[in-house]
Image 1 (cartoon, rainbow, N blue to C red):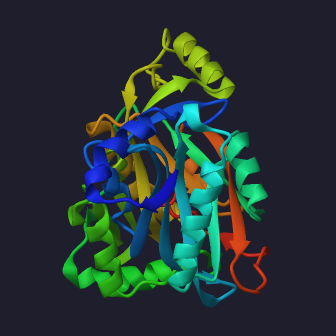
Image 2: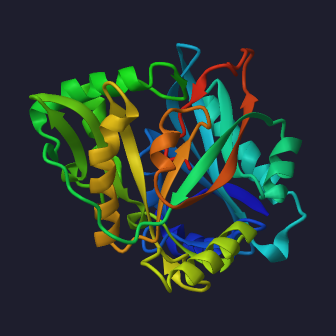
Length: 350
């Protein structure tokens, strides 16, 4: 068995591998990164996919990317590890361990001071595997899955981002996330470059809410199905109960639908929601985002948040379910992680 860097010619084999490796334990999802497996990694400054190959067949893969983040107010270089998969026929042979080692060594060589990953709370095999590799839990986020199903009222003052807005918007964002770890402040130039790196994202999909001639909130509305789609193989207990309740209530009023088993489903994510005074400033943009998702027939809006974030109120105003996501970290050099600050859950990671 050989561990090597992936090349473009591996695209179809990697798409097929991921389709053979459903993710999760309670909620089980088969992910589809067709037609371009590598599109999911576009937003990162630098990324690398490693594959495990035996007799010319790709039997495992793992990916990593370099990110600049802020911890305790200090800039750090991080290696983010994600999307590990091992063919079921070849498990128990240490493939995931060797892929993790290749990823860790790669990001270390590129200046990363630590590695981190995000793992769903019920993905016990992955939690155990990364624990054996020296990773420890640093934080727990909640991913709110909101089910859009009908349009909401549109507010005056909501409009698309303009070129002259970028400095004001980046200042607003940097202030919104001043007390968050894992957020890296933007300049107008890096802000535009990031938005342009999102697969299928148009600059018109980043909207602002203007009141009395001043921008009071901003929000990027990303149709993430341009990078990944999924098929639910098994519903979680929570989703099964929600589905039963919705079916009953549908006799009396319009209700959302839980994604069906075996059907492709798509989701949208909010990118860089920011506000000037209060999370309530985001409500006009949240309505706009809901309508964006409904028009694109998205099944879910996925919003990862620190449970202590004051944006939780925004996520909870709609019908939703939530799932925990563990952040695991492994230092590559000696420094102390901050545990008292809020954690920014970047949707491109989660």
